[in-house]
Every structure is written in structure tokens, then in C-alpha cells.
Length: 542
Ligand code: G3I
Ligand code: 9MR
Ligand code: ZN
Image: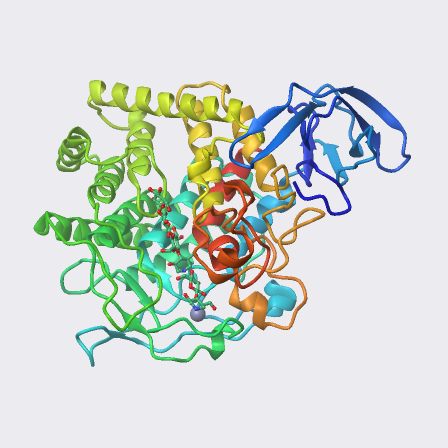
């Protein structure tokens, strides 16, 4: 555990709601620990840590100090007999509101194709970028004018499948927790009518619509320069030619899924937009039907930007069928969904950019009251979801930091898995009308904001020791000291696929394989689809 200044006591650096479970994660065999009023220095409560756990993922022994009993609002710190102290944190009714807003506002900062004005962006303002039409790779001089949307990450590429995952998480958050989005961000589009989360998603959806091939209805896989620009190049300085790569089945499936979802969500507010989303989804579905087998996407030889390769497209088709059925009630889509569900060729409970099956399952289960269902299939999917949630809870109960990642799951973007798992736990609870998994999901939030072995808040701008040097070109190039706020870092990655990690993290345990340095893109990049599940999860707790 990080032993700089504050010692090996990790807490959620934002704090805890009064009535929630509260745990300090303390390195070593501990014993007595105390809760100290950070203002007066007075010890307000003390107790014994739980039996120490040898934690496989972090490679250390952890003693957990449970101070759930203390509910009185205030600012506190945890101390141990040997003089160690945690960062200060608050206990209060409302602790996650600011972070929730910032995690959503981050999408505005990722916007491409428009000026980010000081009025909305503060010091992180910049000029409009990437406005030139993109050459269609292999079909030059054909061009497509697909401006707008969100940059993917620390690079300026725009990729359909990850973009669809990010938008789907936000739309799902809105469908499950509309009350969490009542406060304006604000955005340039804020009008007091449509919630800002829907304005923000629409910015991406409009770009996605431009990524559909007018002729065939398939979705182009991605839009990027041939190579990544230098690490401090601002978006508007990245003026190399843009290329659109060929259509892929995974992009087209994701496109159909998120468009069908949008058609449903926007229908009450903008019938014309909703109708265009539905038409786009149906044309994409028709493309999928005409291409039942399609090779997985590979970067053409000259293009070395993110590949987002994925050989398995059945899960994206499954998601698309579920959303199209939920939105239209058309029996054709139900039939297609049942068929794909029956083949069992993919994981039906995953929520990653390559594994979209979980979205299909969730959509089908959430449509239960609106649509006729195959009762047997619905029961099987619900049982499967409950079982997955139960497994995650079991892993969490054995983990030193209370989360559901096994050591081998600290991969590139492990924080996405942390938040995806919390999302799955919350949805499993919601669909069975229980609060069983809420506590476990919240432990994942505590981990994200500091209760982890590196003792850092993985979100820029939040916590006493937040990420300061994300692999994010605007944060590097804008001359502002603080990085763009509200960005979720990828997190520990035992794969160590960058030079910095290979050199400096070689001997680190999986959960400790992290460095807050710009060079380490395999541990410390930021992306839209690592932020989006965090927005969903915090929406439950605000
Ligand atoms: O799924 C396997 C797992 O089965 C295996 O046990 C494990 C062992 O390494 O690997 C897992 O695969 C990993 C995969 O991500 C899972 O999502 C790969 O190792 C890992 O290399 C791969 O990383 C991806 C990375 O691109 C490199 O391709 C990240 O998911 C993905 O988020 C990241 O995306 C990049 C874009 O290409 C470009 N833009 C920035 C973005 C974020 O860094
Ligand atoms: O900046 C790039 C980042 O967005 C990608 O996720 C990553 C992996 O594809 O690659 C980064 O670019 C690096 C490139 O791959 C190798 N040379 C150094 C680049 C970072 O400055
Ligand atoms: Zn741009």
C-alpha cells in the first residue's frame, strides 16, 4: 500500500453517507483503530479491525476497520496505534453529487467538432477540432462528413462500438434513475426541458448517425487519423487527414442497439429525431440480416490507431434484437432474440465494448411489463443474472478491498470492470426488487475513489489524492496545471503493455500495477466507456 505521508490506510476520499456501511482498508495486521474528528483532533469512536486477509490481487495483508456504526455528519480521519492516518473524508447525507455531475460533464469535455467555450469548459476550453470530411479507406476519394461525437479517450479517435457502449450506459442510467439528472450541468444546449444527460447523448448519437453507410445501412467501424498524434497535441492542432474504415458487424450491431434505445428514450421529446433513430436501427438490422457471417474487424495495414477488434458479433446482434423488440414490439425481432439467446455462443451478462450481451439481457428483462415475453427464456435470463451477481458478491466478500475483481481481471481498463460489475449488481437487485447487492456495489465506488491498494482516487479532480497525470492529450497540451476534471483512469493492469509499466511496474501485484504518469497509457488512460458505467453507478447513490 502506498506509504507516502498518509500511511497505509485507504478510504473513499469523498466519504460515506451516514447510514451506509463504512470500512477503512488498513495494510498489515492491525488491531485497534480509531475514528478522529479531523477538525478538533478528538477521537470520537474506536474499534478492532476484522481478522486480516491475505489479499491475492494486491499482494498485501489487509485489515478492515468497520466504522459503520458512526453516522454523525462531519469530517474525519482514521488513525492507528502506530501513528498512521488516512486522508480526511466526510460523513454526510450527500457525498457523491459533485462527482456524479463531473463524471457526466466529462462527456462534454470529450466532444469533438465544436469549440469548448470558456463559459462551459472553464480553463479547459479549446477551439473546434476534426471538422474535415473523412476519406473512406480503400474507396478514396469518397469522403464522409462525420464530424461531432465524443473523442474516444486520451487519443482523438472515434470508434462506433465503444461510443455505443458509452451512450448506452448513459441512456440506461437515465431510464433507471431519471431523478439523478435533474440538476443542470449546464451545457450549451441546456434548455430546462430536455435533461442534460439526453442533450449530451444526442451529441454522440448524431455523430453515430453520420457513421452509417448511406447505401448499405452498415456502420463504419471507426474514424481516426492514420496514426496517433504526439502526446501533447491539442485536438484542434491534430490536422492530419481523417479516415473512415470499412463497415464491421460488431459496429453495426452496436449501432442498431443504441439507435433502437434512443428511438424509445427520445420519443416523448422529439418524435422526428426518435423516428430517424429507429429508421437507422432498422436499416442496420437489415444489413446484419444480409450478412449473417462477417469477418471480425482488422485495422487496414496503414492504420495503427485503436483496433477494437472483436471476432464475435452474435452478442451485438443479440443486443440489437432486444432493443428493437423492446422499442417496436415487432415479433421478428423477438424471434431473432430468442434464436441468438438459445445458441449460447457468448456471455449474456457482460457489459464491455467487445461483449455487449449483458445489454441485450437487461433490455429484454426490463421490457417485461411492456412486451410479451417467452416466459421460460425470461426466467432463465433472470436466474442467470442473479447467479452472476451472487458470484460477484462472493468474490467481493473474499477480497481485501471488498470488490469483485479476481487477480486476472486487473486488465487494461480494469476500472471499467469495477464499474460494470457494480452496474450489474445494481441491475440484478432492481430486477428482483431487492436491495441485497447495494452494499456490495457501493464498495466498488469506495474502491474507485480511494479504497484501493494504491491509495488513489482514480477520478481526476476528486479526492485528496486524485489522478493528476492521465494519458489524455488535452490535459497534457492545454497548459492548465490540473487535468480535465471528472475523468476515470483505466486503473491497475497486470498486462503492463506500455514501456513505462514494463520498466517501473514489473514486480507489482495485479491490483498494484498502476502509475499516475502520462506515459503509462496501459494503466492511466481515460475513455468515455470507463466514465459511462461510473455515471450509471453513481446515479444510484445520489
Ligand atoms: O479479454 C482478455 C482476457 O481474456 C485475458 O485474460 C487478458 C490477459 O491479458 O486479456 C484480455 O484482453 C485484453 C483486452 O483489452 C480486454 O478488453 C487485452 O489484454 C488488452 O490488450 C486489451 O486492451 C485494450 C487496448 O485498447 C489495446 O487493444 C483495451 O481493452 C481498450 O480499452 C483499449 O482501447 C484504447 C483504444 O485502442 C485507443 N483509444 C484509447 C483506448 C483506451 O486505452
Ligand atoms: O496515445 C495512444 C493511446 O490512446 C492508445 O490507447 C495506446 C494504445 O493503442 O497508444 C497510445 O499511443 C502510443 C503508441 O501506441 C506508441 N507510441 C507512443 C504513443 C503514446 O504517446
Ligand atoms: Zn476532435
